[in-house]
Image 1 (cartoon, rainbow, N blue to C red):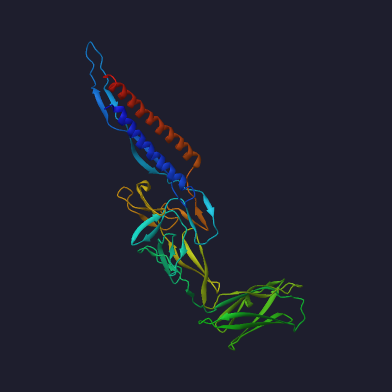
Image 2 (image 1 turned 45 degrees about the vertical axis):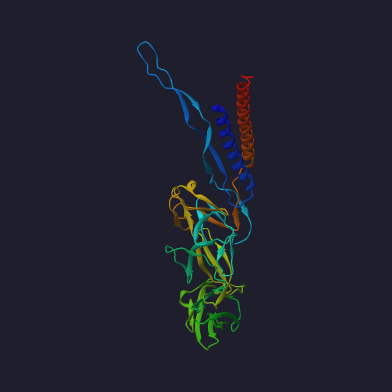
Length: 391
């Protein structure tokens, strides 16, 4: 049988594979974080018709004569270039800027993905659309225990930020130097004990001939006093603070110019207990919980993995990959560390399929298929001529 017939068949098979790969790329043009693939061809073994001849004194050397036996698919490679960002506004949508893969577990198997669309399940775990559970390190009392074994990243929906007793408070603003002697200004602030119980702390400023007297009192009956004197509107250092029931009130930034009454409490460092209300994602993968008492604490950190040879990963469906012997073992770390990319919250990575290139590949594959089909029909005509020699 003619060798060209089988060469044409191999060409049909190879270009059909190219059509399959190109069609899959186009079908996934809107798949989150999809990575396009490309087909590489190579020729098959060639039949040696005439071997090479070495040069002689009177004759030159001759090259080998070989007839190729067709084409085959050498490999299908994955293009891991980064796709464009698509803003979603959802805090649980994440995009990796740079190298790396999210580490997830599904059915006890560890798989890796670039698709960062996650949602909390009934247990507070962040899971992908197919149920794969995001892996990382959870925080204990606001401290991320990084470096240990990976665990399911969990948003503690019933987490409580502990209360903190007030130990300092600060007052800022201006006390009017042109106020009448005996005038009073009263300022209040809420402070907290170690259990988060709120009480009121009151400062009473009384104008004197030399400056201002400050009398402090809290709801538990604790008191404190200080005297403020000013030189050209600037507070003299001797009256910079007072203590009331274990709380140090800082008055050092107060001023004493005429015509302005802006004195007020600036802040205090205590707080009541609070519950988790929402969370945000930082670039290093740390999930920051925002509590009802205004506190901010880390509740976990997302882990990323990288590979020596990402092209060696095996596609496992659901936009996930699994490690193989040629990809190398996963190297796990935090975002922004050891060559890993940063995370961008509220965005997803789009597919990196280039439609213009894929439609061009469709044309190339179609024409290649047609050309190889012509090889088969032409070989068939030659065989028909041979069979017609005997009539």
